[in-house]
Length: 270
Image 1 (cartoon, rainbow, N blue to C red):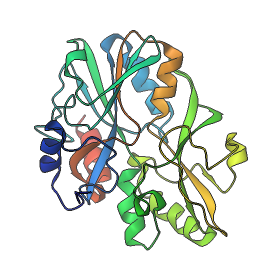
Image 2: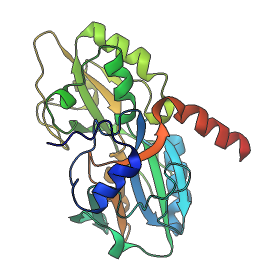
Image 3: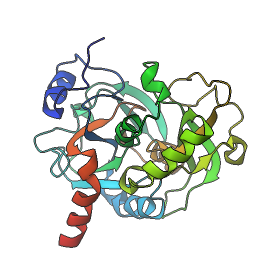
């Protein structure tokens, strides 16, 4: 397996376009923030943006692009239809296909949402000596549907989806402190050590991604996940929606440690 960890985002975008990279992006382009994707018709964009604002843990918005597939603030020169390894295509709330290039599904009235991703804080965890098990094992992060309902907005409602990383209680406390400093990429955990409170019955059977090993003395730590909109889209039954496939993110050209200041600066100018 090639090592893409030290490559620049622009290099990886090209390798994705060419078909060299077709799988999950965790651990790629160390130092750069990654993003989840939702593309939907403009007529639903206001409701979706309101939904995201009401549910900032799973859906922190990084950028909104109206009527164009070309990324601006989070990756100048990137095409959001070709520069993610894998996409999900939803029709009337049903996932009908996974593709590596979503160009043929683009419509002129589409609106693009880039949403913060927990892959972005994993670098900080690793630097602090907190193992990220799915990276260690070369797998996709395990993700689970929960019984916790998000705050609804307009036509959008549905269950919270969480990502899980197992660790010792001491490391979990440290991870809580570290990720709390990244509110624009899911922030602190939503639950530490109590999967039953989220309605999760088996942490070795994720709904998305891959199972990872959980060792004796470890507890599961759950963060809000950008796959949440996919569960919400299933409820809303929109005619056509494009999302990233779980674990296959857009790699931005903004550094992880600059994301919060970058977004706060954008808000101040708005």
